[in-house]
Image 1 (cartoon, rainbow, N blue to C red):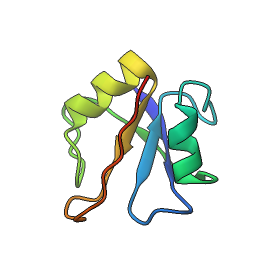
Image 2 (image 1 turned 90 degrees about the vertical axis):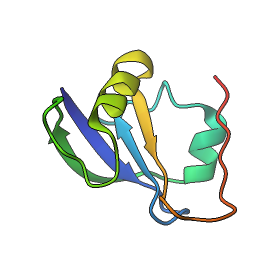
Image 3 (image 1 turned 120 degrees about the vertical axis):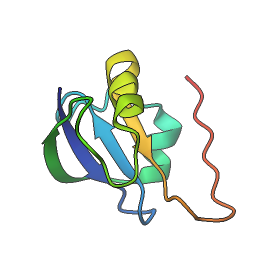
Image 4 (image 1 turned 45 degrees about the vertical axis):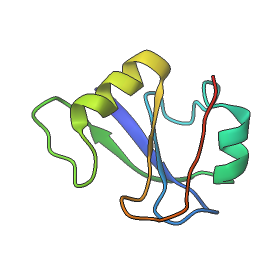
Length: 86
């Protein structure tokens, strides 16, 4: 599956994976406000055998297929909590 990855211009080390490039229509408005203007980082071909540095590729693929996006949070940032409601 081809996906596009964006970084937040407001929150360091937060990345948004999209199933369709530049299609932010499935992203909750509250999350978009929190992220600020997304900055395109790269396009990536994901498959179950691919390794990602900080994410479980199977979970990313499932989120992309089910909701059209996946949010990558910093692994060890204390006190940062984002609740996204659909």
